[in-house]
Structure formats: structure tokens, C-alpha cells
Length: 221
Image (cartoon, rainbow, N blue to C red; front, side, top):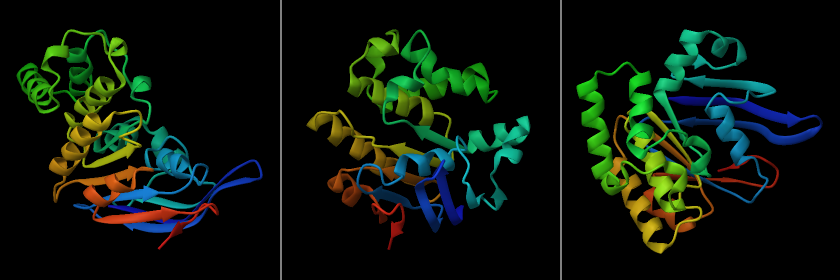
């Protein structure tokens, strides 16, 4: 589903990613672990089309994803419909007046009917156990509640690829357990999940494969 061919990335003369090649297969869950500064966040920005490699190729379902491709409005829309991104700081992706509106926003952007949107909103409110928060403003919630709302909003759009950046960051023990179980239950033959984490227990519990990035900005097999 995702193929990286000799990906490198530099800020000026600073190497952030160095000659990374890897294939991520549909139906599998991958965790990427490594020290701070190894390039995980930059890799995730590339996977989501927010940055582009200075060298190498990023292929998504056989399509070359680069700046030229994403400048086409329809291409960009199709790509972002198929991939969902949960930021480490969930607050940066929450912007509507209520939790209910937050989940519904992306569904309306997809052109779903009112009935289908309502059905999905209710389903993910229940699934993430945030029904009581439906009328609350997302930015007034706790860190754990914001994480659940962000997950509900992204999963409700049913993207084929889920990219989760440090999904347990800032959560207490109960919150970590809930999100871990949620990720496990969302694994599917029709979904690719890629996780960045410092939490080795999460990686071991949810992943089909654990990849290591080293201080030289490479994936070590």
C-alpha cells in the first residue's frame, strides 16, 4: 500500500531522514520506535503529504505522491480521503464548537448524507465512550478526552490508512489501556495502521511488525 524508495530529507544541510526504503502492507499494523530527533515526525509528515522528500520516492497504492501531484485539487482530495492522521497533540486538529460537530465535519466534507453522517457520529460517540461529551467544546476537554474525540473524527471517515503519532502521549494508565484496546479492535485486513511511539508495551501489544529508527535517521531491520 505504501512504498518508500530511498527516501531522504534535509533541512538546509541537516539530515533528518537518510535513504529509507520500506513497504507497508495493507492489513498490518506497524509501530515505529526510536529516540527523539531520529526523524519519525518528519517521516509521518511525508506519509501524510505535508512534506516531501528531498530525495527518493513515496508511492501510495502505486501513485507517486509529490508536490506536483498534490497541487491538483482532486488528487489531493482523493489522497487525503484515504489516509487519516492523528497528531501527537490532538488539540491542534480540533476546531469546531462541539464534539458532535467535530466528528460530523469530515463526514460532510466527504459528501455523506445527513442520515449516514448521523449514524456514524452516534456509532463513534458510543465506540469511544464520549456520548456525554457530545455538546462540549473540544478545546475545553481533558487531554485524554481530546484524544478520543480526535480518534472518533478520523476513524468515522473510515480511511484505509491510519497514521497515529504517539497515541498514548499524556494519557494516564486507564487512558492508555483504553486507547490500546481501541487500536487492537480497529485492526482489519482492509486497513493499514502505522504508529509512532516511545511506548514499547504498546508496540508489542498492537503491532504485527515493530520498526526501529536510529540516531542516523534510518530504519534498522
